[in-house]
Image 1 (cartoon, rainbow, N blue to C red):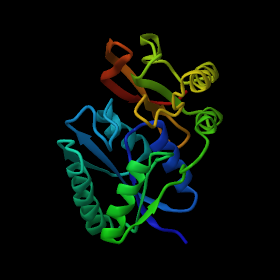
Image 2 (cartoon, helix red, strand yellow):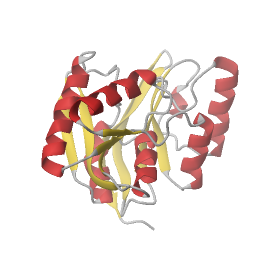
Image 3 (cartoon, rainbow, N blue to C red):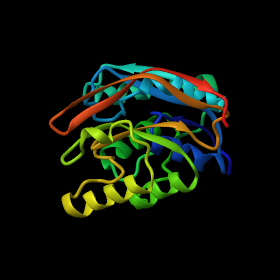
Image 4 (tube, rainbow, N blue to C red):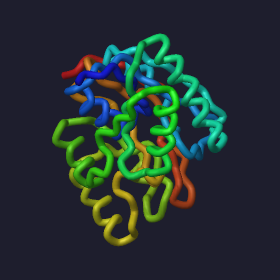
Amino acid sequence: MTVRVAVLFSGGKDSCLALDKAMSSHEIVCLVSVFSENKESYMFHVPNIELTPLQAEAMNIPLVKCYTKGVREKEVDDLKNVLMACKRDYNIEGLVSGAIRSSYQVNRIKKVCDEIGLSSINPLWLKDEIEVLKEILFKDYTVIISGVFAYPLSKDLLGKKIDEGIVSLLEDYNRRFGLNPAGEGGEIETTVLDAPFFSKKIEIIDYELEYSHYSGVFRIKCARLIEKD
């Protein structure tokens, strides 16, 4: 049964892939991006969340922004409020998220959805993390690493496009150090610059790097949409 859904959208690989999968069976009526003041938000992706309006434009899908101070549990209430607005304004029946293994995130999303009468849809739930990375390569996404937050992730990974070499490296780090290769524990953050369902791609014009003690961010300061080749 086709369901009218919103997508909890960070602009990273997981939310884009979840959206991609949901497109085949549901009607995507809006995106919801949560802008958190807390760089260490328990629930929400932070690096380059400011690019979601460009990504939404590239997909021609309305974007609903939500702002939160990122206080633990209170940020869940902020999500609930914006979803209630989406249910009123867009008549959504469900929410799609890119959760893979984070019980903390998926349980809170489900609780909010249950409280306001939405289906919680998680197309990537319990998928193998390496297979998720390989799928974005197979589908020809352009994804860069926009944040690293764990040993032994180095500065030179920031801004790098995820390719077969990066996937192999992350697979090796998973074996040797127990690093989650999909970064769902907050070890890695990503930003999608292009995907098959984008009508245009994102070009980075200006950026800056911050890095110290195995923690850093590739911050996109200026970007634009350009035609695909």
